[in-house]
Image (cartoon, rainbow, N blue to C red; front, side, top):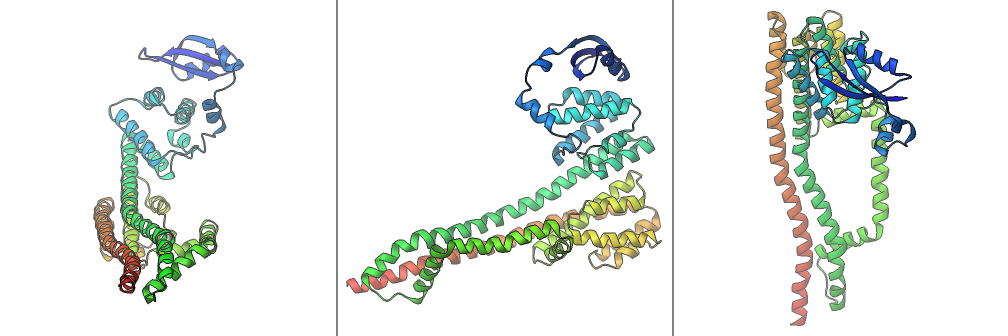
Length: 411
């Protein structure tokens, strides 16, 4: 059965909600375990007799333990928790406020379950670990905050990490949008000009029987090829693309080599490498500052890297650290990591200020990533503009030159 309840907390604030239970006594016990005093409990008969709405059916079919939050939504959640706990609000009260104000039904259900687990004696990090919505790095930050009594700082650090991750990802996507638009525009122009425009002139040229220039013949041949063999072109593209996508999802070796190749692509490669190193430095500095052990920080910061090749190099660093090699010495074995990074990590290790050194390196590499993105965009834009100009110019010339020949015939 489903019961609707109204209760008050220790600050005499009214809280309403619903609970599926066998009896009213079970609801009363549930409320008292949460530190609430029941005022009214009544059975929700509509919930038993009436069919569920489409919205509720959708919620019930989704396993909230597997439900994933968007990074921006998770960042807002972490920031709200940080602000409330910095203001001196207890964890249990902060959870109640979050539940009362949350509009996302799935997230609200998730928070209610976490709150129930807290009242049953489970720690917050253990409760969060039961949900896929919370990344492992966030869970470890919360766990460190529980250990040192600074949960507010843990939530603040989680907010900072997510904020930086969103910013770095957004910059890469934003930088690629304009070049991608130009590429799509170029392909569209080629198809329109060769498939629709040129065939209209082909009949005119053949009626006059004039000798066509080599440029026009070549463009016409390309136009006929696209018109007559476009199904085969699509098939060839599919034969190439589909196996690549499939292998990228199923084969670790293929994905490793593909990611390694990505780092060697002119313009794009340096951006990806700098972005990965900046992300690693930021994650390491935040985790070590939160009190997470060095080895665990290395493992967590490695796992957030998307490039499998970089991740494998960091795995090698971790193995070296496990046998007692200093982090800077392990990093120096791989050319992937800049000498300045190795030097700063060495200074940090020797002075006991590794967190500060990594934080400075994170800021430096994020600036370099911004500059690399800007440089890539600045270089790709004129290149793609020239390509578009050449494509359009070639097609226009292939049409205009024969027209001058036709004019001479008419004269």
